[in-house]
Image (cartoon, rainbow, N blue to C red):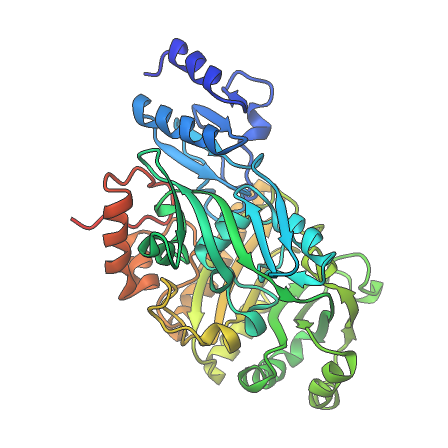
Length: 459
């Protein structure tokens, strides 16, 4: 039991707030993106700087409380929180410093990607990230980071230059290619297993206006679209990317009223090219399988990044299943279409993100991300605002995953995984797991950081 005297002493050591269950702000402070997660930590430490993180970790060690680390709170399994433990909340460590001459960006550990996009866009730059602007920088980066710029600029981890880290013993280190290079290797895909990252240094790329947006087709055309897409994405210019999706058309702009609530398939494009070059790339698609609707226009990159935030606010019920995929045979396409037609709710979806192009250039051992030979990262999400639909969305996602998993490569993107057990984690890291376990033993030998996709320290 942690005494009130100890908690009060802890509060006096922090510049940020320490929130307890009886506090008025507690329920808001413990909310995470996935409304299916309802964890109740004993304490939430809202750290405002590195010194606060050090103090919080010291309190966690001394009190014996299990410690979790929360950045943006978007983790699929809600792994920023644990029942009865100490949640270290980094959301106040939020800043973005852009060096336009060096094209580098230093970002606080609690920052969200929308803030990064806003700051970098002023200089005609962007850091490769995800597709939802409210996602936290920390979790997305440490898990790998895929999104609209992956084919042209690589994964987020491929653009990480350095990180400031507070270790389990409270010491502060810098991880880069020159300092603590083994830790730097592990951070680039190994998740939150190794320490609390309070600052990231990224390489940015020239990205300002992009030609982007969704093209939609009738569900009866889905198989033909997928067959065209599986060939196109293998040889498309790296500046051209697009993820395939099944969707129920939301009732609002830019979609016409006639399509509202209709189940359709889509490709959401992002082309860091001129409109002329983008249109040339899609000439065959438009002539062979004309879209039923498209909203493909020049737009500022931050507009694309925030396009889906309104549709997916914090608090929806989410159930996630995912796989890496190397090939997409006709039999797999038939199954995709079958389950796409069964989407149970407006928000439920399947996305197939291309992870080739620039993401294929590093080897499978250059970072923990071992599936450099995969073509797609597929995620199936059952989503709905109503907890009463939890079973329906979960059942659909599980059945869909079970049908398609035999066509997968084995593991999955850790940021798309819920709590699925050690075998699934090992399958994701493959031969890199042994090296990760050795780094874990060096920097966190007691497995202090265990509320994550956990890698146990090597014995």
